[in-house]
Structures are given as C-alpha cells and as structure tokens.
Image (cartoon, rainbow, N blue to C red; front, side):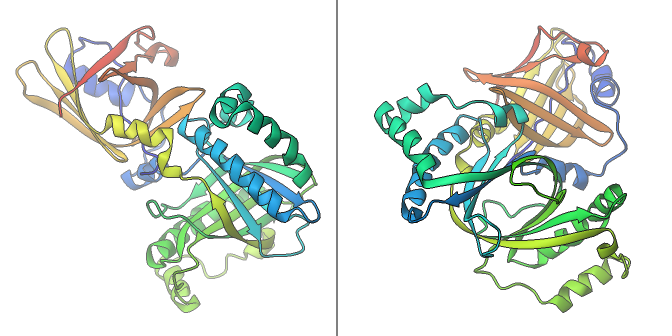
Length: 388
C-alpha cells in the first residue's frame, strides 16, 4: 500500500447532525476551487512532497567498498522509514559517463523538518552496535565524496502502479527560457501531466511520471530549475511512438506547443542499484491500524461512523435512533511529520487537515477549528471505537 488520506471533521461534540454535515463544507476546510474526485484522488496518491538528491564521486579503487558502505547505510535508512522519519531511500548508477559523479542517492520525505532532522546516533548505535556505527562513520568519507546535494519539491505527478519498483529512471533537467518559468511549468501540468497519465495507463514499462522544482542546491553548481522523471520497468516492452502520438491526438492537445521555446533540456538515464522496502513504512502501519469502521457517539446520542479503506473514507452521520442523515465519500491522505500523525480530508472545495493517534484500540482526533477562526476545541478530541 502507498500513501493514503484520512477523513475527519473537527466539530464540537454534541452538535446536531445537520449542522455537522453543513460545517464540513463551511467551517472546517480551507476554501479552494471545486475539484473533481479524480483530482482529489490524485492528491491522495502523491508519492512524496520533497526529494533530496546527493551526487557521489567514488574514490579511486573503492567501488566495492562504497557499495558495501551503502548497503550498511540502507539498513539504517530502513529503520528511519519504519520510524516515520523518511519515506524512501534508493541508490542509482548513471548510464551517462559525463556527469561528473558515479552514483546518486534519492531520499523522499513529506516535510522539510523531517529531511533536516539530525541523525539520532544513539538510536542508530542501538540498532547496529556502537562499535560498528563508529567504524561506519569513519569509513564512509574515505569511499566517496558528496560533490553536490539538491532538494526538490513535487509539482505534479501521475498515479503510480501499486507496489511496483522501477529499475530505470529517465530524467530531464529543465532550464526555462528567461521570463518563461511560469508559462513552462503551466505547460507541464496542463498538458504533459495528463498525457503521461494516459501513457502510463497504456504502457506497462512506464510506472509513473513526476515533475519537480528545485528549491536549493549546494556543492557543484547547476543551471536547471525543474526536472521531469519517468520511473520505468525495463523488463516491460514500451508502446511505440506512433501510439503515443495517437494518445496526444485523442486528448485534443495542440500539435505545436513549441516547448523548445520555453525551456532547454538535458537528460540522463539511471539504473537502480539498491533500495529500501517502502512497503514497510510507518505510514503503511498507520493504514493497517485505521482500516475498518469506527464510531464516535455525541453526548446527545447522535453518532458518526468512518469506514476506512486505502485512499478512501466514507463518513456517515446518524441520529440517535440510528437513521442515516448524511454521508460523504472522500479521498484520504496520511503523513507523518515530526513524530505526529497528520490526516487530510480532500473535499471538492478544500482540504481539512488535522492530527490524530490510534492508542489502545481507540482513534483520537484533535479538534482544531479555532486555529482557522471558527468553532473548535484544540484541547479536545473526537474519540472513535472500532466496530468492524
């Protein structure tokens, strides 16, 4: 299972069901333009918010030692993923020989705070042993030099194939023409995002497409500001160019977008060397806890039920006699930031965001309304008991 989203409405316990259902669209969500269900589901399946890239130049004659070092670090990264401090880590080798580096590592996160948090060496020492950790810290810099780091933020993406791991990565590094940044970025989202979604649905070799913007870099200087990435399964046969052209035509997109006037592109292809198992993440464990049906009863006997499944929550409101008054089916998302579990309810006209925790079989959802200038009790919680 990948990332998913959760629904919760921070309303005062005891309010009547009709006012509760109206408040979903009025008091508790951030105002936004109307969004279709598919657009919100896409947001629910966003693979990550931030990507860190580190470019590694291996010391002469230390290739085997470097890979062994990375294998040891991958076990530490796996622990970070399990603890909710990171979403994923992978090591890639460029097929291009003129890039100035031998490998890149990719780390994905949902928050910059998580990305910038220092390593807990005491905790790592408990995992691998203090002596082994000290030896690892001492040897790592002798095997390679990190010649440059970059941090990217995700701008657009396609639905990815569930639990499929790419073994090839094709990246286009984009430098917009002066004064054309926004026009170029809009073109990627308005046309190519939709195009690559249809291609990915038809082409088994394309697992997903991503579009990112550079936030900052250090070390070796770069001139590009954006990237597009195709995550691929090299074992699958791709569809032909004529079929791709047919997809573009069926979408009724312009035939002369003239992208070359909006940006310059240079590309690189990478092959996977090793990666952590992202299916064992803290987010996945949270979904395992939440799947099923949960009930919260108000003081006046009215109650609500949440029915949770991957990427979806069905929220139902009942009166004290058990008669259903209203229901909503919404895409859902979970993120873990700074050790706290965050949920997102993706409504057609905005997003509700709150904090929750499952403890001793009960679901505690923080009431946060007053932080948005509306009703709420941030020191209170809606408490759900699991019924199915």
